[in-house]
Image (cartoon, rainbow, N blue to C red; front, side):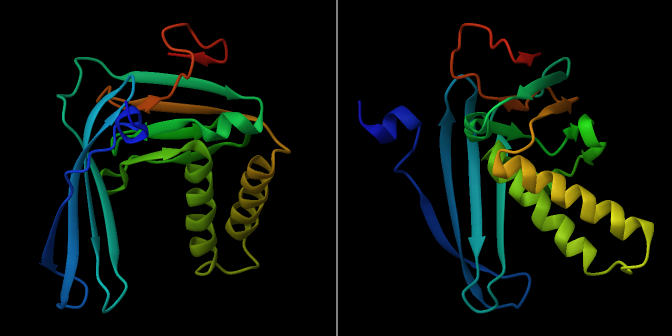
Length: 187
């Protein structure tokens, strides 16, 4: 079995020209199906516009929503845990209870990423939000404090609990020891 096959990477990528909704010029859309081990197949799409640099990524499950949701609690105790893959559906609420941080459900932001990349993405979004907040406000101070805590996570200086609540039942955190239970994860 090749490395691509082990990772579930499909060489059948469909690429086509598409209209950019941002600038009206032609951009490039790519579509493929990827298998995520111990999870399922997902449909990935991406769009990139070379004219205005707009880009968009999307993931769609190829399975039906479950009859019941899922609740994951994963205690991250070392930097290696940050490299685990997670599937975050747009219906999922993601929280870090240690410092009351929440990422609300958003259908446009489903993703298959590592926990580390997810934390980096949260830092980036908060930094963008800080640009529009008055530096003298309590909101600014709270955002800045959360960014510092998230950065400590990436540096390996702070460990935490990642909680995913997804009513669709299709979010997922990788367990590298599957089918054995992960002693640091509760589902």
